[in-house]
Amino acid sequence: MSEPSQPAPVGIILAVDPDRFAEVVAGLRRAGLTVTSEQPALGTLSGTVAEDRIPALEAVDGVESVDRERTVQLPPPDSPIQ
Image 1: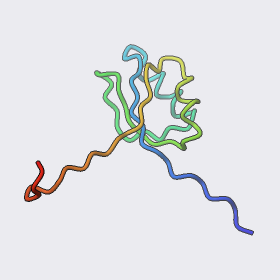
Image 2 (image 1 turned 120 degrees about the vertical axis):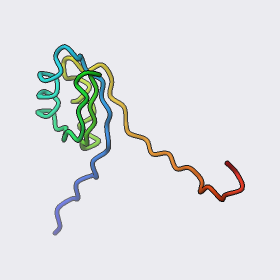
Image 3 (image 1 turned 180 degrees about the vertical axis):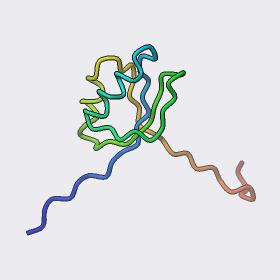
């Protein structure tokens, strides 16, 4: 029997308390976030996490918002609709 496959991680963008940035990021890592980018001066960071761990990220003290990354695809320059 094969083991159940793990769901693909989803991209997340978070806003956190900039005055406690390092402390909050440490809590997010413990909750399962793999950090890919940090902007401490802005109080934002991005990373990936299993979808079922998003509520755990939202529960970390100091987290102000958790949003899924979105991809936007523009049409090619030579397409009739711009």
